[in-house]
Amino acid sequence: MIQFFSENDFILSEEIDYEKWISHIIASEGFSEGEISYIFCDDDYLLKLNKDYLDHDTLTDIITFNYNMGKQINSDIYISTERLAENAKDFNVSFDDELRRVMSHGVLHLCGFNDKTPQEEALMRKKENEKMKMFHVEQ
Image (tube, rainbow, N blue to C red; front, side):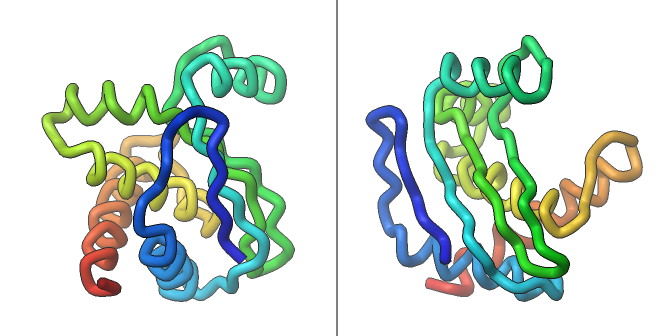
């Protein structure tokens, strides 16, 4: 089950479309869907999580807590909508495109993809682009 929550004033429109899309991403990587919560928040909220749980004192757009059980995806995924807006502006893309990129990024981490090395990062970007295109297929 995929659920969406907000700790700020952000409201995800088309929740059903996003839910179907995330489910499709998970299945396309050979995993099954468990309990997944997307929590939208502001920079301060995510920074506190970053400090408290990861010992990082930096702003970020997403933190993914992995509670997978084998091939079943279970997670709390926190996304800063403030970072999304800034990144969208910096990368000259729409907020919705940046939102989909970050949402897929979190799921891809849960499916075993990383982005620590240049090679891993290149594969992650390729997978993000592939998964973003799937959103339109689901509509």
